[in-house]
Image (cartoon, rainbow, N blue to C red; front, side):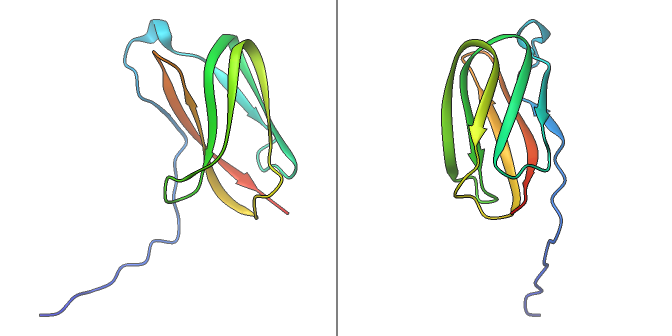
Length: 103
């Protein structure tokens, strides 16, 4: 009887694509990762949507709109060192990638 507690110390998420229709899929590259001051994203073709930085609780800490571009940058100032999720959203596409911020 009673309850047991489990502490999870690692979270491993590479890339998650939430659309099964490959015609909407984007290839993208995030650099640098780990990052200190800013993060650059390069897409294989023009992307319109939003990019968001989320904490481990799913709270959006930073967001930026991207309009018909194959490159985007996100300022990381104000974030403490740690592991975050970068989420990309459009009408047809959603993907996420783990990023590491260092101070």
